[in-house]
Image (cartoon, rainbow, N blue to C red; front, side, top):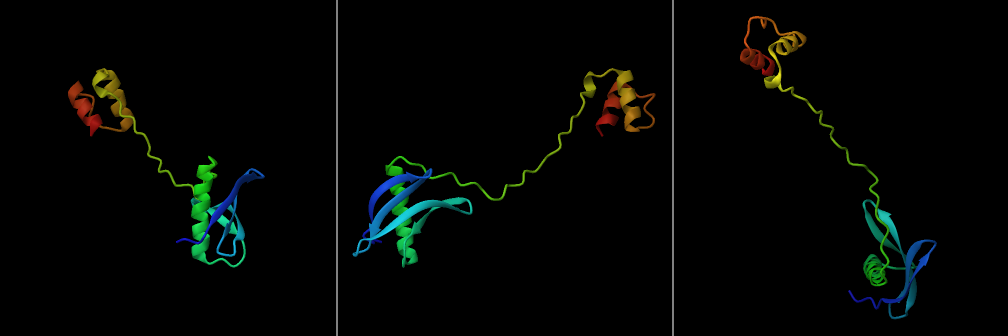
Length: 129
């Protein structure tokens, strides 16, 4: 994949890292700047008459040049935010620490019938089911 790509300089233009260089046997010039494509940050190559393979080779070489120059690519921002599933939190009361009158009140609020003659253990079992 040798396309005779030479990096001439790495500069920051208007806050955007830019790689300038030459390619091919005629030493045609190019300029590569980062751009977002989906969730990735790629290099856009500005020049005339390039095939896809040469553009990819220049992009790869330009990314390497940015790393060597200690310039980071901008961070890609996902266009779609992933949906976060909201799970409702169910708080289960500690029936074992409640008194019998509190358990009877909880049974009444829950609509349980026939709780008035039950012992504490039976009230807890009814509330848990």
